[in-house]
Image (cartoon, rainbow, N blue to C red):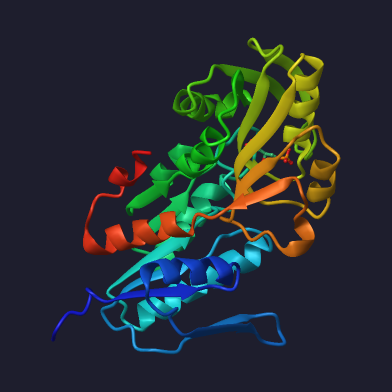
Length: 317
Ligand code: R5P
């Protein structure tokens, strides 16, 4: 039998069809034909509507809200592709949901990020392609290859073009400080760190301290994701109190709650710059929120994975 693994097929789950469309435009291929719906009993059903025997299949599905539905649909799509004899299946998860539950830091709690890895593998995924995991160590929860891309060059380019003098990059908590340092280096700026404390398992946080010299500077806060907006908005307040003149924000994943855009609109930020790893519908946009696309980054990575070329070489910005 002739192997046709050289034929690339990109399918979309229902979480983010606009991103899949933009990725397929970059790749100059049509979106793979499939359907997904729920029966009256709430069971998800998926059908691949074209032949994918031995094809190199990529399924694009960020596991953002509704996280359980989107994850389950992705698992079912992988299962459908496996049973349709796909040659190789890559789960493309621009946002890896449950990434924050990545360690046993309280008694009797799960490590759901690991459970999700096991589910994806059991369903039949051969590879994972993702963007800015909450913690890079999640890669090690898989025994299949994981390509983790970063949106940092896209965000860095945006701020470099602004030519802000006296910039300081601010990690909004200690956990993100290593990646914030990379942003600071790329923008040729010093780094400051905010000491933040999460209040139990609540979504609220408390700022304890601004570490570093920020007075009289323009601050750029950096985080991997924005949910309620509490972390970054409190960081902006603390930075203004510490004497910064202006404050900008950048983060990869806009997993905004319903209230987050309103909180951002009233914040001290000049701009909150995010990417489209997660959909940002019109009702969640406002004048302060700038959305940059990761479609060409994902498209180029898919093309390189498909052709067996280096993905790492993509990151020389
Ligand atoms: C937490 O560790 C993450 O890096 C983010 O800081 C967090 O998800 C932001 O959440 P929120 O916007 O609700 O403060």
